[in-house]
Amino acid sequence: MIPLSVPNLTGNEKSLINKCLETGWVSTAGEYVVNFEKEFASYHNQEDALSLMNGTSALHICLMLSGANLNNHVLTTNITFVATLNSITYTGAEPILFDIDENNWQLDLDLLENFLNEECDYKNGSTIYLKTKRPINSVMIVHNLGGVCDMHRLKSICEKFKLKLIEDAAESLGSTFDNKLSGTFGDYSAFSFNGNKIITTGGGGMILAKNKNDLEKARHLATTAKTDPKRYFHDNVGYNYRLVNILSALGIAQLQNLDDFVSIKRKINSFYEENINQSVGPIFQKHEERCLSNCWLPTARFKNSQSLMDNLERKGIQTRPVWTPMNQLPMYSGLEYIANNDISKKVHDNAVSLPCSTNITHEELKIVSSSINNFYD
Ligand SMILES: *Cc1c(COP(=O)(O)O)cnc(C)c1O
Image (cartoon, rainbow, N blue to C red; front, side):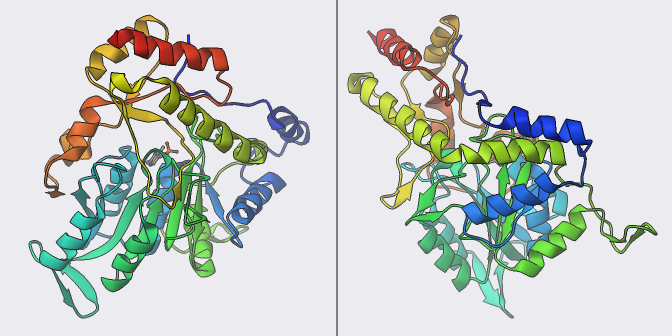
């Protein structure tokens, strides 16, 4: 059995978790919570970060900070994990979906710019969607499969139209654009440490924010908006979203290996690109020239992808299609979807993600690529 992607827990995970168990510091207080945040922030050249119980709660808090609410819109991509859309919906804001670029499978910036120019009006300091007469609050960019779009261009679009920029960096920890790490471009960014991500805390998430006050606001909101711990005084409707010490311990150990994981993932991706025969016709996800992807989930489009996946499954090789496009899910099918050729559907219909655990062996990689080559023989 060759799984799609499983956690690699061969570092200091055990010893740090044992320390939590021995000392009894397993819950919301404890030094690992603080240290994990500090180390994550410093990895990104930032002063501080806020750890949360998953990526979804991190996105939710980012959106609340950005001012997304019942009266406005958040622009995002049609191909993403459903948490992106769910978190927007929790705030009451109405998402507007954008199709992806045929090459890099990220939100199509031409479509975005065209939409803002043609279908919106700029009034009293905000960009209004003419059709609903509601302001556009922000763009939530999703770095699909670890790739990063032209962030300089996206930033200047957001600045021009006075939109907040939120990065859903759940899949792109360690990826860069123009030598700058994903998650450090936006006003706010959210990461995930779910079991299938490049590092994991079992379940967990993190926020980075441009403005330090925002991070304090976020910490307050995520800690039940408590102002006086002794008298249980809370000054707002808060959330119980914080990551606990025992999971932060896991995070610290995982972060120590992040650079190794990224370099292994990149090698796995190159292996597939070099060893799956071109005659088989795979079209791998492409990247902008200045993007260095963490190659979280090596993925390519194949002919007869469904039979290929079935065939590999019978051989014990686990693969997955990319996310079902959001406009095909029942609760989001009524949303506005800005597209020309519905590339989302085309990519979803034939893209296959390949096994890429960081502890996959060279033998296993050879089995996967030769099984794919043989399938088309
Ligand atoms: C995994 C993921 C999330 C959500 O993270 P959880 O930790 O599972 O809540 C959000 N967005 C994207 C794009 C993801 O891949």
